[in-house]
Image 1: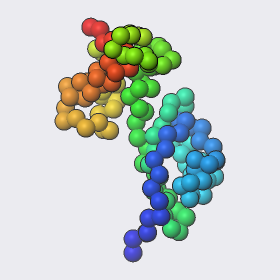
Image 2: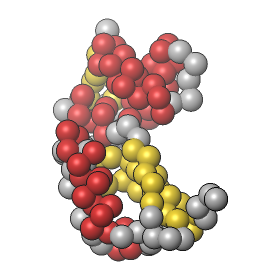
Image 3: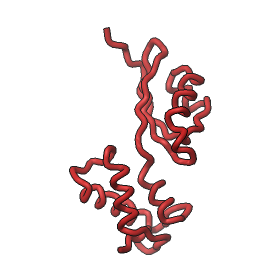
Image 4: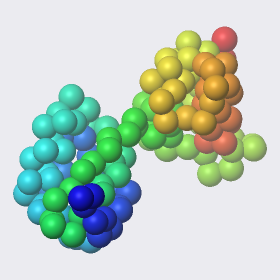
Length: 137
């Protein structure tokens, strides 16, 4: 018999450093068990924001699906800046190379809605443009 789903929660937690708190309490899972499992699976991604989808079941068990780091965080890191432009149409706050964009696109490919790497690169370039980051050759 299939388990009955109680709640599905999407969160962004620090890699390898999840702590029990109100964010996790809303999911309805056993917090220490979740934190231990999540921290073990994301230990290699310390310092990154890690999106996770938690499916909590009525019997207090859970399953989690760990996603890739958001594009904005990857672009900020590649450009070496703290935040994007307030007005991306008039302000450029940093630059990234086409090679850096390609690496980000290859990393994000499983989570992007693109059929090939060229489509993924266009998605990443659009995100960069919206953040005020210029893509150079």
